Length: 127
Image (cartoon, rainbow, N blue to C red; front, side):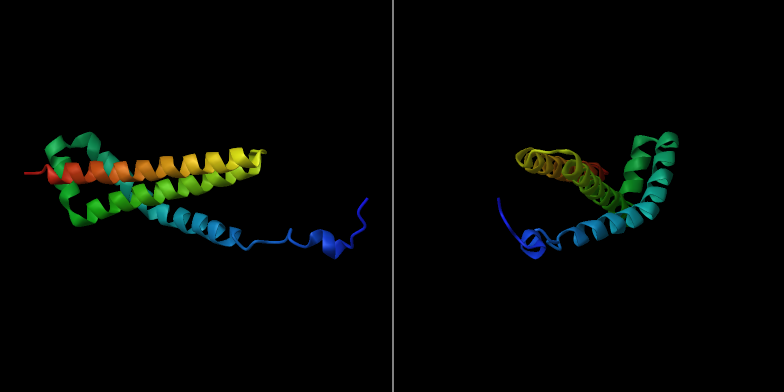
């Protein structure tokens, strides 16, 4: 039986000060997604009424291209942050948490890179 003071029991169990950045980034990306999502809705509405060459011409615009890539990267990053919180809250084995968080991060990073590659290929093919 161990006899420890409450201070000795609590030592090493306090805040690691690592959650603040994560919390702020979730809020910042959520706020950034609001105008980007309104823009994306307008883009998708145009997809229904435009031909493929018209969409390619629209995508060549630096503003539209930048907003599309920004939406993809911010959206995937926001989703990865949210899933990380869910994983850390609901998975018990520590090794499973670590593996799952890394898989989620790699998956969303791959999806963001794929979105960039696809957008670049469409924009370059205009001619």
